[in-house]
Length: 246
Image (tube, rainbow, N blue to C red; front, side):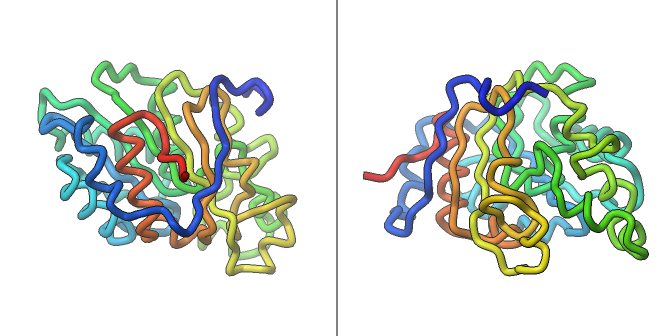
């Protein structure tokens, strides 16, 4: 993976409190009835964790597929093919395809696109993705019970030799990334250099080739529930960039 300093045309900004929720509907001009959004949850989560995001996207004019997958049962390479092939079969045949992901869901998309050409791909938004791995896995991966709780895929999310994110190349597709900057797990945050969301640092969410990047004062487990984050997701899907304040 190219170093962060080589990322093309990316802008890092902060999501502040006064952002009006009305921008969920203000960017309707980009959404078309033929746009399908595949939602992919993170490790050890379920489709219910993406339900608020799902409802907002439907309200904004998209068709959606909130795809579940057994995140702790298989490695990332297997999960990516199983989950995304299934999800694509549920999108309307002529639709453009977008993805909205949380945490490991973003790595599944990167893994899939590294092996498959998706001609109808439009845009991707990743929430709290460990795009350069997480030091939490480095520190705790060998602890008894870690693999039982997080599965083989969890062990693949570190920064070392087993890291799947660090084996994947830069993005060659439109992708906006929202990183969290608030932690509710101060123990895990001790393992993470710099600002983090309790699971991954802001810096390690970044991806070479990304289209846009922003930071929200939200903890990792709640990114996909936050109304302002949801509004920014809709805005990016419609415009290819995040909404700037002011």
